[in-house]
Amino acid sequence: MTKLILAGPDDLDHVLRLLGDFHAETGITQDEATRRAALAPLLDGSPHGCVYLAGPARAPIGCVVVVFGWSTAFGGMEGKIDVLYIRPGVRGRGIGSEILATLPKALGAAGLAALHLDVARDNDAMHRLYAKQHFRARDNILRMTRKL
Image 1: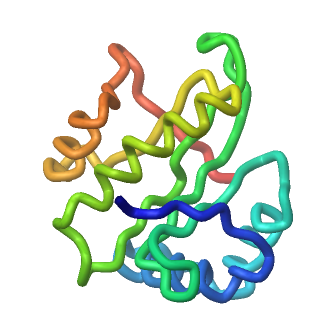
Image 2 (image 1 turned 90 degrees about the horizontal axis):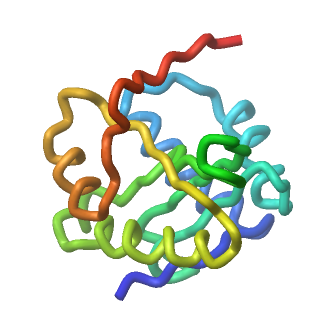
């Protein structure tokens, strides 16, 4: 079973490295200063989100960033998996499935009413992974974004 550890300020370097790898792999262009500014509040206990490290604390194999909001449609606090990253060398071993099975239980016990995630329309492997963990596309919902 893959251990999930709530990350704190002392984990910033690990999380920066993992998030940098995720950004490089997914084509997100962001400098380290911006990445640091986005992560530091979450590691310091911001009510807007949290970060979990996957695997051993000294040598994590991945991370999950969850951000929080409020939903009248779901009747309370909701979360969105902003990042789910597993190092390429350990993928295909069920680690993502373990995380997606464990995380909703923990967040639900803490009062979360719904957990969302975004997935590229053409990423069939991730669609299958998420569907196995009971994530479903919402009928007639297309998430639209305006960058500010």
